[in-house]
Amino acid sequence: MGRILLLNGDSTQALPLSRSLKEMGYDVDVVKYTKWGYGSSSRFVRNKYLFQKHEDMEMYHDFLLPILKKGYDTVIPCDDYGAMVLSKCKNEFSRYTTYKIPDFDVFERGYDKHKLMELCQQKGYPHPQTVLIDGDNLKDIDIDKMLYPLLIKPNHTCGARGMTYVKNSEELEEKFPLIYKSYGNCHLQQYIPAGGHQVEVQLYIGDKGELVQSSVIKKYRWYPENGGSSCCNVSAVNPKIVETCYNILKDLGWTGFADFDTIEDPRTGELLIIEINPRVPACVKSAFISGVDWADIIVNEYLNKPHKQYIAKEGLYLRHLGFECLWFAYSRNRFKTKPNWFNLIGPKIFYQDMSGWDDPMPFIIGTFG
Image (cartoon, rainbow, N blue to C red; front, side, top):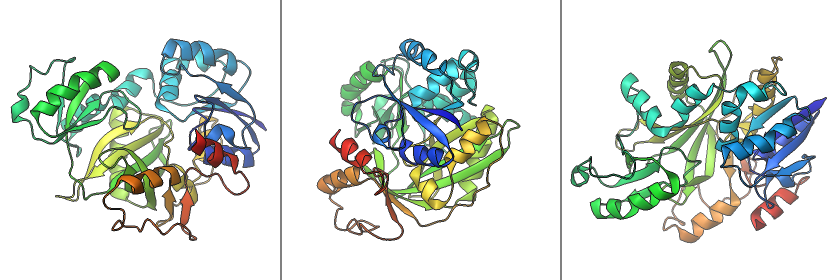
């Protein structure tokens, strides 16, 4: 039927995507960033292109261009760097393949965490208190009057990388220069105390600004506990937070796929906007098992073809066994967590780092890696 390229195809999100795309009749190729990835080990993947300099946009462009010239129906980013290079090089790459992503000025305004917080402040969208730091200089703010604890957060980073918890001004002065040196410009953000859920929202915005499809994932556990990747979550329905995220994307002028991270403030019960991920998230399998086939939606929207309208089911659990084991090893809540950690098997329990009994190698190779 055709060929589709996944960027960061060694990720766990590539597993449900490649399976669905193969069932749709496509050949799936991947650009992988490691030799020991999950998605690139799947039997549903045909060709693999290894590229380990993905943080360098110029090198990524030079690597990707000849691959796209081979002829792909479309290309789907599964990481921030892949989404960024597709946005930056949109005019050039669109000569050889078809995809839909915001122009880079729109992309940057949504992806830059501090710019997103500024928009939320201007429009009144719920978000944590945020303070911008110019370079590595802390002298422009009164660090003794900050509300501790707080988080040091890089303006541009993938997932929770670089995010650092500090309890007082001494820790801030000690750790901030190190984070700035590794990740560039940062901001300080109010730390939301434990007790609430993290909620992740996926949306696709059509060419006319309409909401095409959405899905919601509620996270129960993540590793590390003070700010990391999810290891246990459940499919959910929450029209209110979907509407909030949709309004933000309309204000940005966003088109295509977007994934929001939000966190619940346990003191108020309100969900606060944290960031926009401009690509398919790692835990997207939650949406797939709930009945929302994002591969069908994204590809057919990209190619201007019809697709189904999906209705998600609540209450289906997705666990990442590798992260769950790390969480259990280090958490003091291992025996009093909800849902119960030892509930490993059941009709409503699925695993993010497993493709299926008919495709065992991703779990073996990915876990080893």
